[in-house]
View (spheres, rainbow, N blue to C red):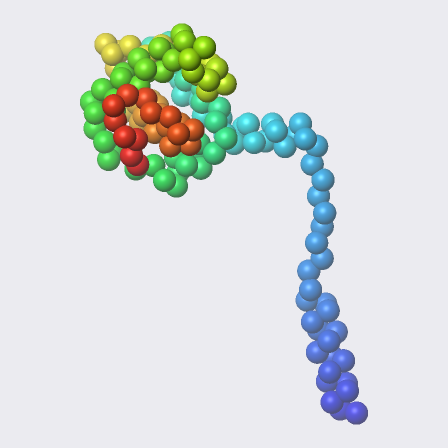
Length: 146
């Protein structure tokens, strides 16, 4: 009789410890908006009057988890690469019959004689690396590396 009570107590303890799953339903628009907010990166500087908006699913996660940390590359290195990548990018935007228009939608106005600062160059450089690795594209003669 004591063992039966013990078994019942153990079973009731296990049953009371089990978690109940709460089913949550999301509206597709709410989910899309949340994903867009998570995957939107905005960099702006009112003094230089520029703004970069990157809306790319997975880029923020990639930047935080796989990209080299800030300070790994010098600003001059990233400026040089960014300029080369932007030139190639803009050429592809201007050739919609030769390149996928869903990848190359808008031109990038990046000028070599403007100091955009380290943060902008870092994020832009890493976006180009992410873009090339994700979409199997090659912007220039360099093999994209992390």
